[in-house]
Amino acid sequence: MKFEFVEFYEATEETKKRRGINILGTVHIYCIDCELDIRGIAARKQGKNIFFNVPFFLDTDKETGESVQYPLVRFTNEKTHKELMDFLRNEVQPKIFDTLKKGEKQ
Image 1 (cartoon, helix red, strand yellow):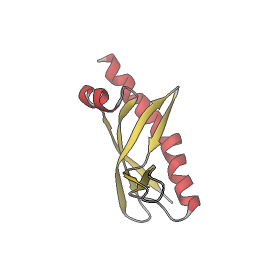
Image 2 (tube, rainbow, N blue to C red):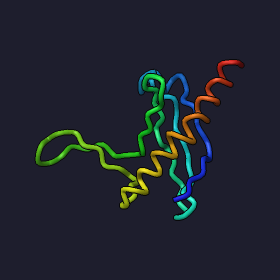
Image 3 (spheres, rainbow, N blue to C red):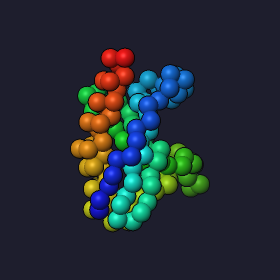
Image 4 (cartoon, one colour):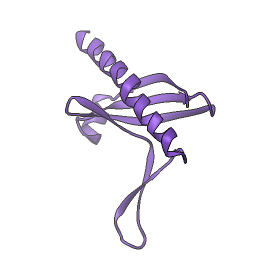
């Protein structure tokens, strides 16, 4: 699967206060092979790395009463999903760090 990085949207100070200081912003990518835009991939600082969270819906499991996350976008092929996560780690993460460094210098 081929992916293209489109944009990183840095979180505002208001969003950081509301969602936690570790939130960096959201990512927009394009899945070329299936002509699919994926927006709202949360990027959070975790140690020296960035943790990516594909958009999801929070709800409560009717049987257990526990909170569960239902992904809004999920590739049915596990290999393709791994390729997406690898793309985010290997290609997008460095671009986010570069964007944040440029913002610090201004």
